[in-house]
Image 1 (cartoon, rainbow over the protein chains, first blue to last red):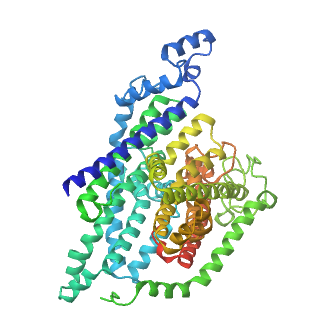
Image 2 (cartoon, rainbow over the protein chains, first blue to last red; image 1 turned 90 degrees about the vertical axis):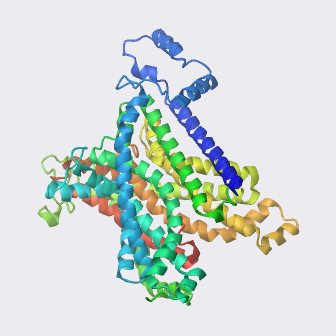
Image 3 (cartoon, helix red, strand yellow; image 1 turned 120 degrees about the horizontal axis):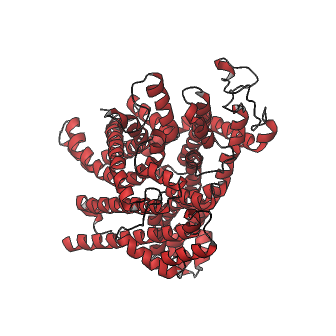
Length: 311
Length: 294
């Protein structure tokens, strides 16, 4: 059994590495398609010959495949070159912003799961009841409201009109509240729907009927039997949400001027700071792949049934 | 506790929906026809030129909030009529839907069908591409394309097709795998039907329901995503009027002119909400087992 688990993990790891490799390749091709950065950067009075000389020095005139090899080597060492704007290694510029984004993402996930799971459970247990109805309306609307608009409305009502919370930036402890709610609202609806349907599925199982038949109280049936088995499915959702959170944070950080990775990416694009964009995009993707890998592997630890069907 | 342990929940669900659906259906279809009409007729029914500047009449509130009846939904910081811009913005959303949904449906379904039917390396390559899509958020691709070609509606279409095709690929592959074991497919194989024939004549009709359901359920995603990209400035071109771009322009005036952000937002929400309700209805009507496809 254990060797099976190990081989499943290895095959999953291989897949993850292939994906990261694919991302790096796409980013390389895309950034070469942008044209050469030298003509962007060099002062206007630079002659064509001088530009060629700089390109030679940077290796931009080498065959594409050679450049690609060098690029791969650099990526492995997490060396993405020097930021045009900050004049420091791009990796450092990105790394400084990671903390803010992780902080925001974790806060958003906590919000999403602490709203979504209880609501989903109650909606499933009292199916057709008031909470179920409210939860379903909440989910329906949650999927129709763009998060940047929700953010602006929260700013308008809670920060501008009532002055309860800061409108943006990362100052003090309360500044994270609005961005976290904005970022967490869509995942909250997803978590709710998922928990509800997982609970409904579980409640129809034979072992739930058995638990009831042997005279357990309804509370015990739900807590000890239904809930535990449903939560397994919710774990997978965590992996999927990480991607949603990271791409959502690009928008939300822009709305709230949150000094994280997402805002950095947008600012760097505007400033044509490609090393930073490359570093941020690749590191974000690696992060998503990594989290999904961890979730997949831990999932097969939690549920012995799916160990055999890995691949 | 009123949990129906012994009754068939599937049946109960269908009974409840039958009561609910005709009214919902009528309303949603009516709204969608209206949306498409506005999108098509757009430029010829706008009360004003959406780009006409009127610096004297700038930042007028909507007529129900103290403005004049000349500008029903007020004007922006350059005196341009919000209602006219809203109507023009409909076109962008509609165009995005018209291009993205068929392309993503076609590419995704084909990929899923091939992966499911042939398995082996075909499947492995296609599923690796699906994984790749999951690891590279659409916004990042949009950012890149905007940097390469400058923002444009074409980029939006490319990005959204790239972001969405995997949904079809995953579901169609799963269903093809299940169908493969069914008697009618095995029978077709036994009598020597070719691969393309089995895929088109036997598999596709059984897959069509799910494909159509996914298409409807993703329309709102396209509307919201286009608005989001345009809001960030990596969506439509600078001079194109889109709901997302309108919100982005009105953002700095949030505390002065609430309507500039609110009005296009409500347009996005109404369209998404109605399309989603319609999609849910379609799903329940065509195939109740797909409840969690999204």
